[in-house]
Every structure is written in C-alpha cells, then in structure tokens.
Image 1 (cartoon, one colour):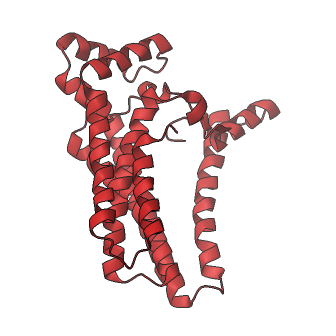
Image 2 (cartoon, helix red, strand yellow):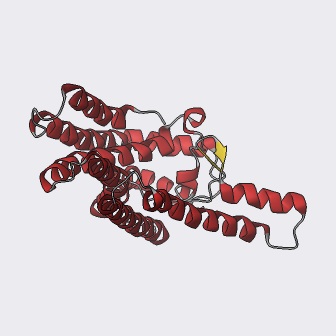
Image 3 (cartoon, one colour):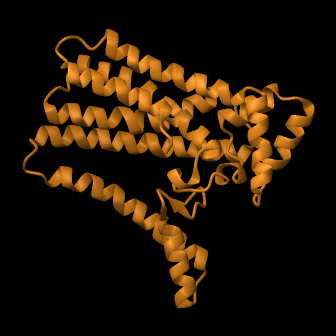
Length: 267
C-alpha cells in the first residue's frame, strides 16, 4: 500500500482490489481512500491472526507461547521501524550505504530471517542462548543478501516471474544501493539522467532501460551483486564453521543452499 503497487506475487493487492470495487459499485466515497482503508484494516487484522493461533494452541506449552509471542511482537516492531526508515529514505530523496544496510538488517535480517528461525527453535525446544546466537549469525546476513537481491530484481527482474512491475521501484524513486552507487561513481551526464528519471512517476520502459544501462556501466549492478554475495557467504561460513556435529548433515546442506538461493533467485 505504501508502494502504491497494484499487484504483488502475480495477484491484485488488497487496497487496489477494494479501490476497484468502490469504482465498480459507484460508492459515494473517495475510491482511493476506501481501498487504502480496507488495506490498512486487513494488515492490522493479519497481525492479530498471526498471534491468535499461538495464544490459543493447547499443543504448545504456555511458557513457549509467551516466548513465541514475544518474538512475534519484537519482529513486528522491527518491521514497522524498518518500514519507517524506508519511507523516510525515499521521502528525503537521498541516503547512505550505512542507512541502506541498517534498513536491511532491521527489516529483512531481524524480522524476516532471525525471528522465524528463533520461533522454530522455541518449538523444537532448542531456544538456548548458544543455539539462538548461531541461528542469528546465519539468518541475519542471509536475509540482508536476499534484500539486496530484491533491490536488483526490482529493476532488472523478469516481470512474469516477479508478479509485479519492474518500473515501480524507479517510479517511486526508491533509494536503493543500486541508485546510490550509480550516483556516487557516475559521470556528471549520467548523474543528471538518473536524477531526472529515478522518481519519475510515469517512467517509460525505454527510460528504465537507460537507467539500467547506467547502473551496469557504472559498475553499480556488479557492486550490489558482490555485496549480496558477501552476506550470503557470511551465512554459509556460519554453517561450515560454527554449526557443529549436533546439526545433521542434511540440515547444514539445506541451510547452505538457502543462502545460495538468496542471491540466485529470480523472484
């Protein structure tokens, strides 16, 4: 909803679906506001739905329910904080590499990577500090790698596989590491073109192609790919060096492959 994206994962987003419903039914209401309102309520409801099954489950011991809810709530706080950083970054129209990586660590590393693995550890009865620390050492850098790959796919990806437009990130002026590095090392002419096109609401495909060419020519694409590879390798190093023999071989192979997939995926 913040991104104003009409589609995600090849499906219509909730706010767009209900905006179109308001148009079709000719409600006496602002169509965009109606769609956004339903989308906001749906998101809030989903957050409660995520917590309720844990709270209500008799199959999970009470102390584990409390632990899982604590992880879920802290993950939600990290997500909101990360989203606010994301919004502020794009609203300002400038950022730094440190800010971009901080956002990735909070929004992807802790929320999307660390929290789910910690919940799994709680359910499996392995939530001692040593195990949780080893899981975090793996989950955070691998999730950062996946976030950087997301930024690459947001410009260079295949729309059919992504299920969303590859013009949206550029149209919204997203201040990604791709954009930042291109601005930092590009020629004066290239920088002028980037400032004109990144954030252009109606950017055309031929204009996006120009931006992509600049990102390749300046080495920005390779720079972000290398950065993503670095973080994925950090996760793989944890699997190779820190996950001892108490971890089954198939577990180590699986999580090593997940780290590899983070930087090789196409959607």
